[in-house]
Length: 443
Image (cartoon, rainbow, N blue to C red; front, side):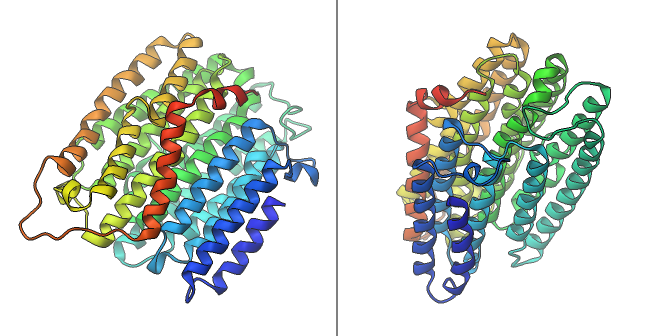
């Protein structure tokens, strides 16, 4: 029922958002709330189809997803209004891919989410947006083709697509999985398949970048881990080599590149790529019983802090014309509340204690340690320390540098502030309470 509610609301909202945007937001938030109630009461797609299943960890991720999409929806204004409907469609499909237990259906839903992402970035206002949208589409098309190629090979070696019954033995299966992962790495912005994202996240509308880099990536991380869990368990040594290598490469290159960026959007783009590297640690640590806890916690933390950071930048771009790091000067005195929201999310991205970003890294790193991957965790810890440098630079501009003379205070729309309160609540709550995530994280 939750899936149906979101899809129907997504079809209805376009009738409202052009002239009655507040009503459209109320309908969207109500639909997300109703979907959460249905999930709480045990209603899921598994009641109607055998290809889906739901457990406590899935439901927790779904609650987080719905809260995030509701916060995004209330933040949207102006020409971003069509995204309210897109959030509802994305919510419905995301619930499905989180609950799916069939690899064939997983591939279909993966491509549906890709199509939704193309619609998101098609909200074009200038040449810069258009260039970012084209890069996103080309990268998505290439990734989709590669994934389908690997899946075609996989269909020749398995008699069932149910996760628990798939045939994952043999060299052809290993080759098929490797090809599919190469395409998925494009979506997850893993180096060297990251080039499109470092540009596109900075070029497309920042609200769309928030959803693409924060919401969609987090959902895909959890769904991919579940789908490829049988492969990872069957080839633990190969998983360590592949995911460990790409984790080190991704986090190191992205963090170094972020240090040299002048555009705030570029800093957040490379930060997003670096976090994809950290998120690969639980994949490499498949031998640990905390591997799924690591990926689930990382997805939950990341969906709040990354989405919130880009949405703050979106508001600052519209209200202040913020593009470069220097444009943040004096934000703490000009708009103390929005500066506080931005700073807390930056601290969370940096991994400061008592925030979700810290505990998510701690659980992911612990999974690596539990699997005996000390060198990988050490490199990740050093990268985390390196990343503090560019986050600290942004905070310095916000609080310790003076704005230009005659610059007026900034007022952020009420909807954006309400949305940021939701993100902040999630970041703080999951920065303090870890047991709820770890307790349900079992595969």
